[in-house]
Amino acid sequence: MIERTMHVKKNDVVVVIAGKDKGRTGKIIKVFPKSSRVLVEKVNIIKRHTRPSARNKQGGIVEKESPLAVSNVMLYCMKCTKPVRTVKKILEDSSKVRVCKKCGEPFDK
Image (cartoon, rainbow, N blue to C red; front, top):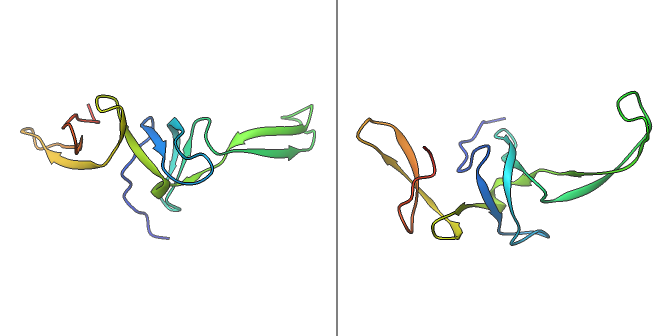
């Protein structure tokens, strides 16, 4: 598979813009660039029926996050307090930074 560039990174705060969890906010736990999916904290919860094992003595129903398509999330700007699109700007020290398209607040430090 082709590895794609993503508009979000690990530890970014995002808002879900489509699907059953539309409008929910969370932090990205893990990014899967090959499949264009992201794992968002406390969003897209599924129930997994597990057998007792060495790792999980009890077994039973376990709730965990499931990956979302990256196209269904947008970066959340703390200054604008809403989901925003981003632009890449080049600084004086020739480093690329993601910037909020509405207010110009940088996401990368």
